[in-house]
Image (cartoon, rainbow, N blue to C red; front, side, top):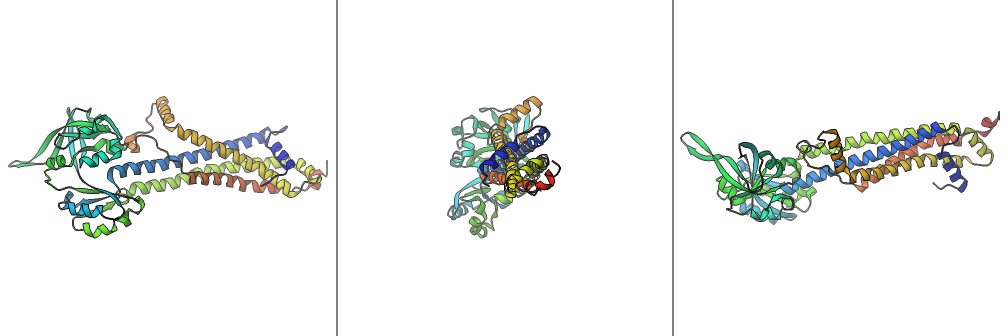
Length: 416
């Protein structure tokens, strides 16, 4: 919308308070503040939810891969041919054998349930999520036959363990005696402590070399799972479709969507609902712009009539008041975007400060799953929010601008 010089001057004048127009200016300021807060809230919430989903996906895939082949009864006896066939499947970037078994762990009289994971040493060292998040100890001390393990940091906190301490694993699959099965209790040295950032993993995982896990669980040369990663997580079902018939007799093929379906579906539904709930804030702010413009038109009724008699057209009046409304909406939108990016940049210090002054744990990782507040800004979403804000402001300026343009100068100035 292009304004002439005199139209810009009048629009600029109407944006500032005149004599006796303090209340109109207050309503317009509240409208601008409401737009700012609405835009900022929507961008912040959507970015945090995007970050939460992306962070959770990265952590889960980093530990569990895009898909797994899980053997019936927890064992894949003839697993090597299946592993080779999986690696040769187009689109598969890696396939590794694993053992996962729930056990009990004890240290200094404390007992916790754990998830034992047996992995080949190369696979442990090549896992960037583990290798780059060692918080205590040394990963290179994890060697086959060394009786060393690495554990999650939350498990270490629960058991009071530091690197170099011993941890005892209790396996129910022990020796059979006339009095029943005696559980096996084997002591291991904690070589390192890691923190991947997902509470459930950091609290449960005990990782050891694959051969040591086979010995502890008396599984001989079998494994329980083959973990698979592909070059496209969204097409994992199509990529692995040729393997379904191959593994049907020995195990079950599941991808990340099946294993975490309820979690990611809940996140998607929550994301959509939160968007529309917070979008109402922007619509309410746009209604405030409507009300402030209506009051402005009523206050400037005589001025509009005089401008009309001096030759100003209806289109000019329409453009002037639309420019006033769009200026309020645009300034509020710009301020909201800036505010959102500032808050997102300092989000973790802000959370820590609020926790410090309130004395409440706002981001409990045992509830939130992830240890820190994540955020990931989607430029397309930000553009959509800006369009929603400015578009709403534009629509709600049409009626008061039309009323101003349709003012009859004869009726207004008849008794002047």
